[in-house]
Image (cartoon, rainbow, N blue to C red; front, side, top):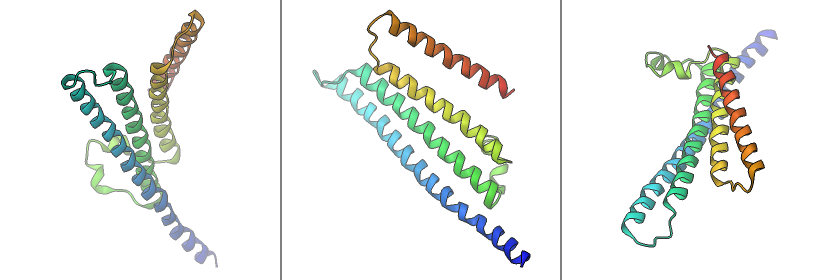
Length: 167
């Protein structure tokens, strides 16, 4: 009886292919959307320099789109690292990938290691998202500027401790 359950448990690990497949699909979707945003930047730039009074605020619109694209690319990387890590941990190691230089970035030996890698990229996503929101923010008085400076300092401090802990 115990052999049957052990065999069943070993085979049930293949159910983890679902988050691997769907995370990869999400990765592709986010990469395409972010790339579309970058293409829009190229189009806006072309319009700005060729059409007078195009209605495009080149600096604001382009910076917002590019920061948004970086944010989407980072989120896509979170999903990619997640899908790769889940596959390696629960289904099978990918031997062909081990010989590539990039394998160190995606190499995962434990669930804690996967969580650490994901946490670092998620923190970068949050920082980029924070930067995107800062670009849209209107500073009305000195208190707003003080809060902005304090929040930037807190981010820098957090990044310092995050980096310090990895060495």
